[in-house]
Image (cartoon, rainbow, N blue to C red; front, side, top):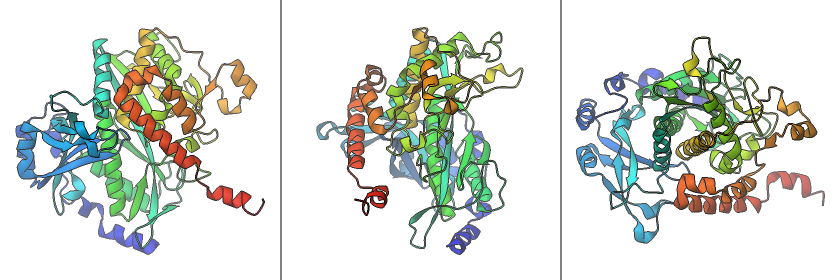
Length: 475
């Protein structure tokens, strides 16, 4: 098996996966990309197909592929599709919708350049009456961004998506075995380092600025951090990130998974999200007179809002049955509803920053995992924070002790609550939440709950291997 992996890798060295690396994305502005820019670049790079991408309510990427000859028409007149075919979108008698490409998201998919150069555009979904479709997760985030803008705020996020690289057997089946023996920050000399380099190249070519690449705590676990951005761009980047890493891993004979807890007994994969609000070009979270946190009243109310609504949001931030096998004490996964500065056992952390860099003041929500829909997750997080600001909520005192070491009595005295223990508990909090219904809208709310409770019930009645091993011969 190892020989097969090495052979695949040797056939796809960095120089051949990216034979003509160009900084073409630097010729496109971050915003304000025009049709002419796209058409000129597509012609210059010999693009043959265009993927028009969108995302369903569960965070799964969907798309329509067009020949490049239809690119200009797609930009000018949009592309119609049948929404009833997408789970959670529309009923059969209201199925007609169209995709409206967001030209700022244009990128050429680097791993297609060797054979059939293909570009992608992320799209918004509209109904026949030219209104944004209420079931479009990207539209949900846009609406919350607009609510924040009315108050003068711009919301920035920096998600950190962890992932595992697993081996495949000779029949291309995934084996849940880590492909390396590295641990936290290890500078390994195995395939891991080169694969992460290829992943970084791919992300950069897709206009995502990589900040660092590291081996994570568990064998086969990794993280590649990209630069923070406005929430919409950041959510777009998170979706692209997962697609790109899966494609590059596959080219090396491996499989990249963002499953929150793929291996029992080791750390799971989280998606810690760094957040800040800017107003009038300045970081609204920074207060130079608030040592040692340097955290403004706006920031504290933002944190208080997220702490107040976290249980209601959990079914969106941690959406799988498997998510709650990561959210257990002892594996650096926050389960206690508290905030602090250096304390990584708290749900929300205020990272330190270098003196003179107050603009980097931010808070880090540590419970989301990378299986979530980033558009819905960021929308909920922003709405909760803004609710805290509007109501001038005050957070509880920060907890700098290791909460894992506190007794249950101590936690009760400090009024430190816990996250839901499983998807069912999270869904019950979600179901009763008028706040969440208002944030994501009736359409998504009802369909999301219905699908997720079905998922829980399917899991609940399954007989697991653990039960067989512990009960079959004993009773």
